[in-house]
Length: 283
Length: 168
Picture (tube, rainbow over the protein chains, first blue to last red):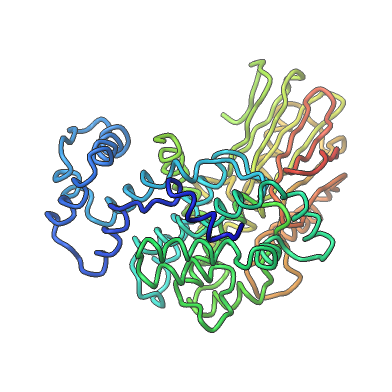
């Protein structure tokens, strides 16, 4: 079965997270709070979940909030968008991925961490047009394609690993040879189906190839966020290789950041560990 | 606070940018998710005192203020505190077994983001300066490691998903 067919068959897993996608499309337009609220209200389950997160996590111990209007007013659009994405795709990403040697929770934790690292790198560079919320979203979604690859390769994953070992190629290269698409491209194709902004799609598609001419500054940013997160010990998959220095250097040149900047990003991400734990716990 | 005295229990977890020292033989000190970070374990077999540190970065010069509050973030500020903690429990430098794990993604090129290698260089230099010898280590590669220290024997174990456990 072709990988795209698998994609279409699993409509539940790949169903569009409508509210998150609509809000992301609005990012550039700087919408009024009332527009944001009306989109969120479209999904009553999500609305209840947002209120729960706000009251148990974000505003815990303070005056409780009782409506999305209040949540948007107090947190702002960017924060609401982050919460909506995390609620909308958390369950789909909080799964074990045997093909990548990942236990349940690992991909989800890695994704949140890369999102936070992306947001922190965005604070240090003026070379990226998109804002911190988009950087976060790109980081959060960068490995979404891995869920897909995991599903389609699961019955033969030992063969894939033997193949990548015998040919001395990375799992990423093996994905491309065996399926015609690697996890980055597949993740991007899902975002395209979800009608997400082109900048987000390209950032996800190229997060392993910052040196490619079609890569944008945001692709480079997600690449570096991934590198920083790996350095912090998060979610190394089997059969992966460290990105060669040439890729990382290219991404650092594009963003005009140096090693000390990335070390500061590692510290900043470490300081936000509690935030990561909180989001892990709300699922 | 980092010294576990007289509190028996099986597992003592060293978090990221954290350190624990112990003299309890029924304990195991463990740290998870070592990527480019370094795990450093010390053990005095004569009196069964040991400790472990999980540091992120080579030197505190990039953020001296943070180092004041969180000394275990850095090799140069964390390692001396680990030694001090085991000395306080009676360990003697000449008897210490020193084991190291982590430092993943070492790039063999200069002038790039190279935390794994820089961590190891910082540690090697610090040890050379103080005459400390590493007796065993598991470093480099592109992988995440779990590092355990058995307080009864001083044996250390390195676990990597999908691979055999290594005894250091």
